[in-house]
Image (cartoon, rainbow, N blue to C red):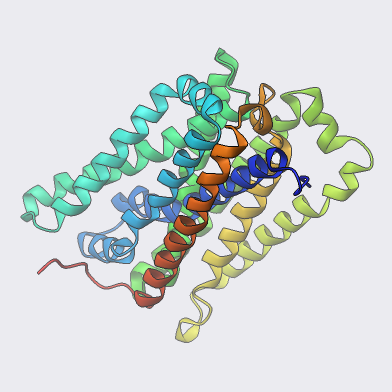
Length: 336
């Protein structure tokens, strides 16, 4: 734990924690609406309208968490911001193009005639898939310490595919909760089929992380750390088994516990993210730059921290309000 009597010690830790929390919330919230876009071609036109309705009130607000995370990286750790974005320039560009495509397609498909609507549906799927693959590629390179080799590119490509499958999984879990009838049955099947892609993705990252450096190897596999960390994979394994058994039995009568797959999927993503956070702390650029080396001056951080204490609760409060108001089953999204 940081020394809270020393601003140069606790402020970088506080900003790293806020940034990490923002990324986790983004991965879960924008993950499910990207997943809905990835699943789009598997649904009928009428089902696609319901799928759009399930994310309509939330999708643009979900991306606020990504803006917040990147903003915190820029103002709190400017040196790391430069190193990371320089190394990831191309996938960041592809991600932004994907976000723009899906945003435009989302709005235009609601007003288009049927023959144009098919084009916007394809662009919505394409933008969602581009964004997910780009984020997965960035994750893979980050885990590999931003090294630019053919081996790291291959691992990043594999991670990109697994993250896209993971987004599809959490998107399907969201649809299980927000839809009914035939679309809900399809969503249960999609979630069940994509679960094993999530397992492979988490396993690949978990196995690769200790091999990046001797520090990470010792942090995970030396004694007694391996005993202290054992609950993390054990709990993840139990959640996976629970999800599998639950999805085989769903949907339940009277739509009971339809929210549970999404809640358990969120917990699984959070555990995987917690493992990554433990692995790389205190580095913000793996094996190159710690949060203390990359941090801005304590005086600057304190002023920004005061602002963050206002902005973060407002964003969180708005998100809670939106999800509370638009709870329940999705209907077709209309603009008239």
